[in-house]
Image (cartoon, rainbow, N blue to C red; front, side, top):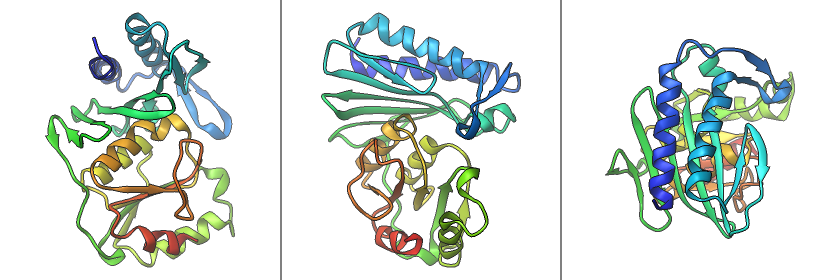
Length: 254
């Protein structure tokens, strides 16, 4: 089994588990400002880790829901076993499993699986992005006025008078519409597929964006930090677009 096969198999098995238990997430615990965690986050995490460790025991694993495993090889997996936990805990069907593979610090393969719609987004570095095996590309929207933009920010950053709300108000006046759907991995994939024209996140972790960022770039999109500088998985904030409206969004939220 190669990396691609392992990632897809693990994502689809975890997705099947999440779909089967949808509406019955079990115990829901608070993670403070980091949101919530359910029994299914942990079950999905165990399933994915078991799949990876059985196939690649020497690889490292970075997951949202368990301590990082240091590997003895250059390969590392970056996992969000349930991206959109708050949605899942409320039976809101917008969530995904996100798995990326990193080789010597560079993400070379990513998969994001939405089990409720049976949509598998994937990309391999340099080989394009795909949805259920069909190639996808970003939208051709050139102006903010016709754009649909998703955004994400935690409640703690949205206090009255905060810079996040100021940026939100500025952007809202310039675009066709804004959406806050609650799954960074899916939002990045939706930009990749042309369903959204852009995405702005004021806080993310590596596991939120590792797979989605590669899928977006392989679909012809662009992702940077909030100032338009280079994006890394440690950036913590990002603007992701079809490339055509990128500078306009950066300017609008600055």
